[in-house]
Amino acid sequence: MELENSLDGELKVEAQEKGKMAVKVLDALVFSKFGGIEYSMRIRKNRANWHNSSSNTIPFYFEFDVDIDVDKTFEPSPTYDKKYEEYIYEIGDHIGRALRYVNLQDYMDEPMFTYVNDELVDNEIDRLENKLILLSTNSSFTYVNIGSSI
Image 1: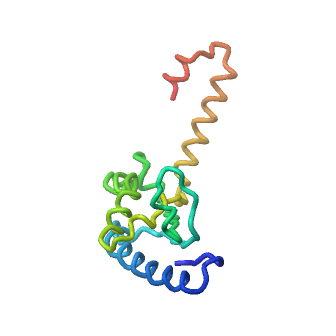
Image 2 (image 1 turned 90 degrees about the vertical axis):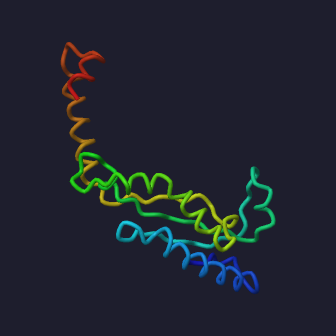
């Protein structure tokens, strides 16, 4: 957990206390699944949020960065895990539900993602790009050819 430098005094103390509580709950209920999902949490000063008027009364919020194991979400991968893919797809909902247990759900911002372990997907994209280049240099290049060749 990291605190933004602009948090000071009583606000910093409150942010630290609520942040520790959030980390404890999230570690136990959300990020311990599938052998551990890596994440980081940063506490930032209040954000402007036009669609949620309650955010104007909350002096700080939790910003999450979640590591997504791309291989586990890519079906052709030998490490593909459908349950992991489904869980990650709804990770924001899981975080929100867990924070409700300690009444911190309003402090949550939607998670951001860092994609890791994506070499297999990168190789597949390269392969498809190369096929497309070969098709495009062919004189009988049509959209039908693309669909049938890939």
